[in-house]
Amino acid sequence: MKSLRKTVLMLTLAIVLLAWAGVAHSAQVKVPAAEAKVPAFKITEKSIADTTGLSVAERSEEISPDARHVAFAIQKDGKKAVVLDGVVGKWYEGVSFLYFSPNSKRLAHYATKDSGEKWAVVVDGVEGKFYDGPPYRAFSPDSKRFAYTARLGNKEVAVIDGVESKACDEIKAADLTFSPNSKHIAYALRQGDKWRVVLDGVEKTQYDDVRNLEFSPDSRHLSYAAKRGDKWVAEIDGKAGPEYDDVGIRQMIAVTFSPNSRRTLYVAKRGGKSLMVIDGVETKEYEYIGRGNFSPDSKHVVYLIPKGKKEALMVDGVEGKEYDGISSISFSPDSKHITYHASRGGKIVMVLDGVEGKEYDDIYDSAIFSPNSKRIEYAAMSNTPKGRSIVVDGVEGKWYDHAGWFSFSPDSKHFAHWAQRGDKWIAVVDGVEAKEFDGIIFSFNTKFVFDSPTRLHWLALSGGKVMLVEVQIKMAKPAEK
Image (tube, rainbow, N blue to C red):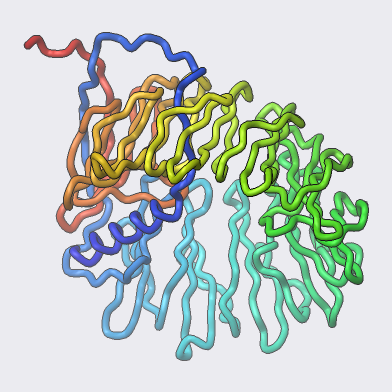
């Protein structure tokens, strides 16, 4: 158990440290006056796995997106097996890369044999064919389909719904992608020195290179960056745009679609300068440009530009205030507010709609808006007092050794986050400590999950057990002093 607890602690802290980015304060977001009530909790706990006496492989834990299931690898006598909600699977020479489907009902992982020379994907406990190299895998958004890439000798194939594609010289594994509606799948393959995109089994235009495949939110459009000679273009639905020295510079996505799928933008480079191409129209050139994005209603565009040695945020063509650095830019769900954190003189501030909040030594975790866009939450760090606090609606919460992974309820009235004091982990709801645990288990995509406006759950460690903790919030009048 100590091994698992240490592993989860290291994993969570590593995730927190990597995710430190985001900020905000409530300067222009008006919050309704708080009711003169405090939360009371009805807490139930259920064990879903017991690690007592097991040797858990370090950093093997995986949490389902709905935070109701846990899987991890155990090791014994030189073999490894996957444990899902306490049930031990088949033993292999090695297992790794545990991966839940989006709907949390399916689990995939890699298995190895022959001293790690052969690899297979195991889905729902069913072992696939063993191949010569580690595959890359993906569930479809609806969780019904599964695809992965694999190596056969010096050739590679895509295995889609259990069917192998024809062999090719190389497949860009990271570009294997399903459309949001799960009906389409695309990937990039190389034969000789030429690359093509394959969409639903149909090969597209030949190029010297292709990268960063992306479907539109409505699944009707496919974009990617393509190279011919020494020039790059953004290709959308088979139509190539203007040639540039580069497209999607240092970006994970070459072309960004608006949420309504009707607009596009991308960064391009020409003659050592960068520019943004918005709906086919070029902006002015800059030394560099940060990745742009659309507001949820698709009406607004934001991106980062340099101003000498400083940076400014460009919103709908209007330059904002200059700072030493800007990051973690986000819109509110109703698209009426925008927030980011900005550095100045060694301090960090949350900027909301152009108004600065309090300075901190650092601000962690991207700020989140409540579903109704009227509240905002972020994590701040201070060296005096030393620690971290969750700031909600501009009001600092209690200071802890560590704190983060915050969530709002669907009706925007409640919020929750984890905190750490010494070797104990604490669930905090509406600023009140609900309960201490030996550990609270999170991943990048799984935090506290609200099931209704007044019910939430998470996974925690208690002794050697992984517990599903469910909480009902009841508001009560504070006790009279």
